[in-house]
Image 1 (cartoon, rainbow, N blue to C red):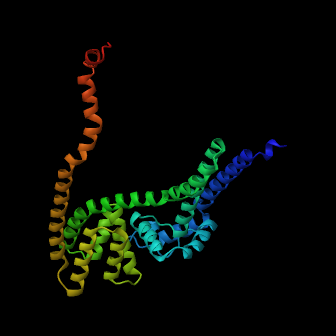
Image 2: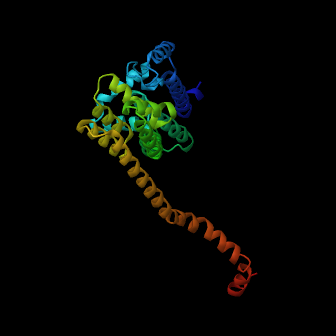
Image 3: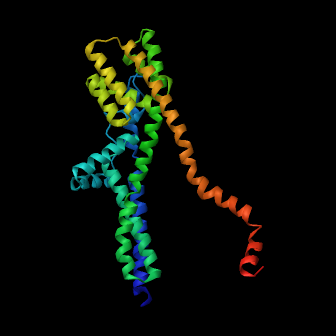
Length: 309
């Protein structure tokens, strides 16, 4: 009976219980609801085919929220407004349709995982000083894991949109010159391709159908993507729409400018290649080369200087 009351056993049981609660929380957070799936399926069937059939673009159906997500939403009010804005921007740029409360719950779960790992290590180290320092550090570092994943996803998505924009504008030019309106050309891009940019174009059309002006819809596009070229594209289209300038001429100029920018970025990456290759060359290739060249001579040098073979 005393062995069960041993502090190490108590801590170990607490860690195991914490991990079980964490796994259960993740399952509750990510478990889809049958009712929500039915609502989205019905809403998708009701959407005009020229807009989009992607359920993530439907503003009429609220995102699914579990009880953990609702609890996470209650924590939002304790965060600084700048931090809330930063997290919302990260979610938008990464293309993830999830509530901010779900992200906060993910951060808390990762933090608890870090604490559980440290407590498990503390059982074998038996060092109170280690726990005093490692627990808050692990809580903070593991809590940053969802942020790092979002930052990586947002960067990859921005790069993909930047690469796709020039080709999309070329297709817009062809469609508009063939007699389609700008909105119909956006729908044609979404019909032709299914990538991050075409999904954003479809969302612009959806927002306009819901009553927003073209400038507002394009402004939301810029906020969700965070790509400078998209901002250049959106401002040019919005200004042309307000001033009555022919959209075909504006798109042709945009297509030429975006091709020039894409070529300049490719040249910039090519110039950066030697600098990026310098570190692996110095750290990995040169040491191996020196070992291969000087290795056979080391026994002779050791004998000459130290008198040992």
